Length: 214
Image (cartoon, rainbow, N blue to C red; front, side, top):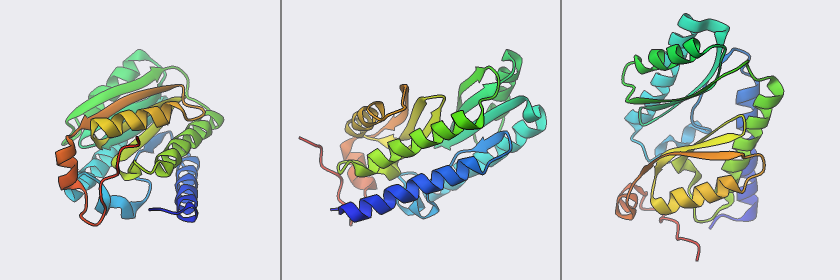
């Protein structure tokens, strides 16, 4: 069982890493990804899939930068080759072109286009979204019956997206946690559901599956 000191250290690491990563990105294109690289070993995707998802994010960002430049501010997050695209585009035509461009990237399975037609958000809004994401991740860490490494969390203008391979129990619990987190206006689930039996196979032998809260 994780003690309070360990939980605080992990929470601080999540907050610091997310804030530094997002606030240091001055270019209009932002790439999603894992919070801590060493978590790859306990991600429920295969190592090959994790590497492919990172490659998709890089290729999509490069393609969009070439075709649309600073006409869009787009965040790209790939999980198991399903790509979530959030952010802003100046016109509906640009928004459509974002989806078409990402859809043509090698190995992309599907695209969920959540880009809004509006002006680009400012640094204050983006910082707020980063903070909300960090708070959701910290709440998942604090929940003793959850595994934060099973989820990717993205927040855009107060809407929090949950991605991952999880059981229905985990999906419902994470949704409740996200909805109760300050700053979250809406929760969108992009989760791949697995059975409890599949979870036991995926779970490392040394890390027993968390028990539901009664």
